[in-house]
Image 1 (cartoon, one colour):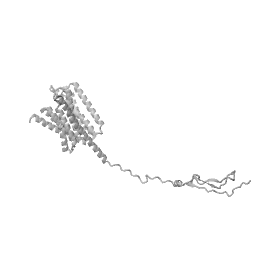
Image 2: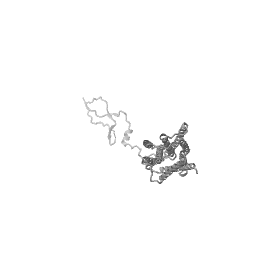
Image 3: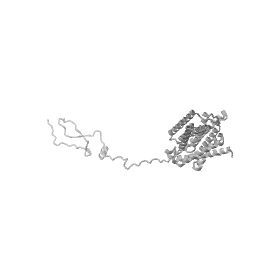
Image 4: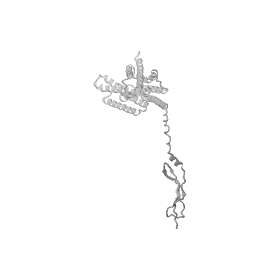
Length: 372
């Protein structure tokens, strides 16, 4: 087997290992509680995912040793394409047509972009550049994590932000790895220990962030984001700090930008597909929740209390405005003889044993007549 064929084979196996690790991570994220979203250390499946990712990275490095970068690096984008059928086969998670279109667009765009990045002479970064790269990476990762925390009610958006942070961490760890590799060509020195520490921190952060990105967002969207952002971040640093350029001059730069637009369109398709899936799940949950039944009213709770019999009698009693009637009653002394009859109230409104009192006029038989 030729060296070129061996590098292609190793690239394919590396992509399969990365895809398997992503599937296991997504399954662990679904089964883990919220407190273990970053590092479910007590779950054997997570350690299996770590081993698969480590195997994929090792095979990728070996493939680079046997084949050109322009061939091996684009083949790493096949991770997305391998992950979707593997997920359907092993865990029964089938991807829709929109997810497939997004995955293919992201893969083609990334492969085209990486194939257009030209090689340059091996060079390292000085101390100031390394400090700036480390601080810039830390700031970007912290900012993306803060943004993901701010949108925690939207799992798809949160997942994309965490996957982007993971891709940035992995991509910058590759940059520092290349820097240390170039330094080691002239011999190993203690000056590379800070760079090795940065590589360990970034690789660990990338692994933990990628694990958190799979929680509640499925497989395709976070995996595609991570797969695209990782090499793009490394290529951006290579162009700005290592003097790398795009092939074919201005034409190659325009083609690279077009490939970047295609890859970004694929990521947008994957994100919108996941958002639509979340909306469907929300509507289904709302439709399945029964409406609360009306509360039973106790017997007699809404009935008005029966009024008092005396109140009912007074309410039914109709009286004219003038409730006085003429009656012959003893006139007080000093009253003229031609005075009219005295008006006496017919009904007294004073209560008497709970009912109205009607007085009866009494004629005085012993009335004293006044004579002149």
